[in-house]
Length: 477
Image 1 (cartoon, helix red, strand yellow):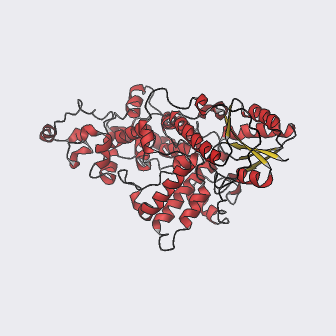
Image 2: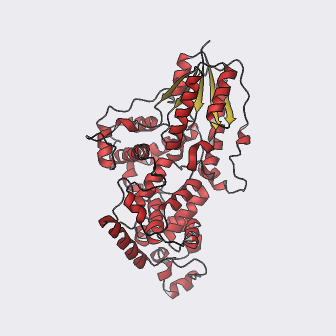
Image 3: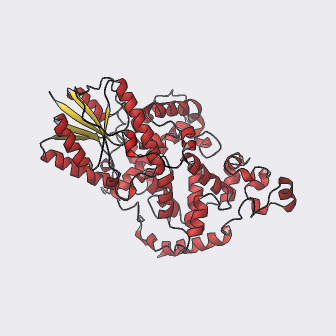
């Protein structure tokens, strides 16, 4: 009797899961396994918000598996040791998994593959989490791309992504299951009660991912090209955490969008698929430049003169107390829900690295711990873009002004009033820059700058000039 183990990682779904599909089609008994080994992800083991999501995603996956008369076996410790032990207990012939592309997981998977092969086991990995494998797209000179637009044009010249595979209905469960750790034993949930906002905002799991995609396609994709920039609107998909944990595949998203009627496949759909392309580009860059989570892609930017003493400023930024309403709204949204609107992510990052001159790595670490969609490729690309030191980075002179950005994309202050309620009584004209509000306006609103809400922690004009001078000097070096 041929037996296989399917090793789940960040592919927590039964639909369009090539490793699982192959196991069910080719083997008579299949054991489904998740090994919790955060230590194998190097300096980037999952942060607190990601751990919360992982707990609920694993619970949702096990529930779906049990409905198909099987169960998810959970183990802890080194993946190699856990899998070798399970192959002996299950008398397995093969171990199958879907590929990941982070530097630490690539190194780990090579070691696991060798150990299993040395033990006489068949191993096979599958493409399941990207539309295009990172090593299949290259320039005419056979180099990796560093700019998004030519990268995506090259992708679009490739054969269209294959359609998603059907959900696995019969799981070919073993006659006897090996012992399993309990999900609670992984201790993924927070000790302190800060996750109520996450519970209210999200439904982790494959079903939650499908429902999120359906709502987006029904209500938002047609106007996505314009509405995606307005943080108070439900104009984006919010699929990022579901994609990171593999509760839905990019192929499923791609073909769901492509499957819309021709009349609906207008600018909104095209713009959205380009954003899926940015996700592909992020993984492409990380795969080819594995040092970028900690080091700038362009080495000369390592000499940027960061502020040496920044503890108080960093804390003010983390807690949403910078005195810039759009920045503070975003940081408070992040803390409460584990997510922040992408337009606001660019604004808060620009303030941190260019006006406060705090190293982008500090921002990347904070996002890593607080985002439910914390993804090493996306997080790295985004922060290096903001700092101007990475692939397809923003021009050195692009420094977001939080006031003008707020006025343009949240003109009526709806987003600000939700997340910075101490400003709620101020008129629309002054809510974006409360420190400039006339005395009579503040008195009418019962508002005092510096008491009810902090004054700006930095002078925008001076800090912009300082950053521009430093960035220009590096650019010209």
